[in-house]
Amino acid sequence: MKVCKFGGSSMASAETIRRVAEIIRSDADRRYVVVSAPGKRFSADIKITDSLLTAYHESRKGGSLKELIAPIRERFEGIAHDLGVEDKVDLAALFKEIEAGIAASPIPDFAAAQGERLSAMLLAAFLGCAFIDAKEIIRFADNGQFNAEYTNDVARKRLAAEGSLVVIPGFYGSTSAGQIRTFSRGGSDVTGAIIARAVKADLYENWTDVNGFLTADPRIVDQPKPIPELSYRELRELSYMGANVLHPESIFPVRKANIPINIRNTFEPNNPGTMILPGVLQHDRLITGIAGKKGFVSILIEKSMMNNEIGFTRKLLSVLENLNMSFEHLPSGIDTMTLIIADTEIGGKLQELVGGIREAVSPDRLEIQSDLALIATVGHGMAYKPGTASRLFTALSRVGVNIKMIDQGSSELNIIVAVAGEDYEKAINAIYEEFIN
Ligand code: ADP
Ligand code: ASP
Ligand code: MG
Image (tube, rainbow, N blue to C red):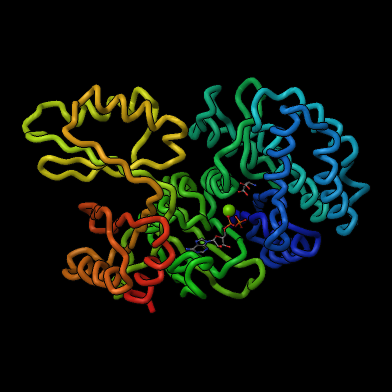
């Protein structure tokens, strides 16, 4: 039995939803379906989730909520009409309830979740099958943390009692008090993985708009080659480092149950896509894929005899802990240590952070560099193969890209380099040319 998740582009219009229904109907094993909110139909289009979040935030600044949600309602009414299900889903009543719910919410999560909820209702109506609201089976603690074991128990029992086909909205759940909470953006992938674990699926199919996991971001490299097979660990590295075809947290539920993930293309359903499997895969490939993200700051801290100062790193990291900030990397030399932190973690607190570091460890020198990008070159094939790093560095130097930091984990599964943000695309293309093309 299979769990299928369909992403935003698959749910974007009545036409694409018809394709989704065809895929589901073509295989009786496809019994549990998780869906995203309608995404973009064309590149300048706006995702429903973004419109809902804008409606929440603008209404807090005094905008008319009714006017802000009118285009969202029109888009759903258009889909319902084109699918011929307008008599089965009472959108007028639902939007009354949604407007009141958004107005009463202290947090944006309720608003953000409505796209998935309506999208699932429309698909269930079109398929003539059951709809189960995610708020009944996906549980969050009051602090917003996902409660994996409670959810697994409740979802398992509830879904086992269901008929042959069920549609479930992705992205959200609720607290024990009934407050709606969402995962981070792209989180419908996580819901799909949670459902796959709960029903002990044989396969988790993740249907999107590309032919599987590609060796690089197709928005940066022209027509990157697909990856036919990927290990869980390679997936974790690549998705965490920015290959956002799959949410980085979707690996955890399926890993617990050893369920393979198959990334597929709704718009090319005959393409086998990518299989993501447990264990280390035997391939002759040196590297599996490249991923990266922009928006990092480095803080170089230099102090003579740093190595001899007991507790130096603890004092430094306690500054971060007090500011509730996490760091990405911490490469060190004899008298230097460099913190690499995402802009999103720093928020507006750079001055506070620097002040805290000066006070805690009294450095001789402290140097800040902003607008950095991190690039990960990932693959089990790199382990025990000398020369990979030197080929990588040569490829970058050939195109004049200066490397600001290097970090190779002891697992030899990846090499991460930091480069200037403006060199990001050039660097990824150079690595791609060297190892994959
Ligand atoms: P969905 O709405 O189906 O969840 P997403 O937009 O979240 O789809 O993810 C699919 C997109 O991820 C692709 O259209 C592609 O632009 C982007 N992407 C980035 N890196 C990769 C990669 N390595 N392989 C495939 N797609 C990638
Ligand atoms: N609709 C949500 C988002 O845009 C969740 C998802 O699509 O996975 O982030
Ligand atoms: Mg996605």
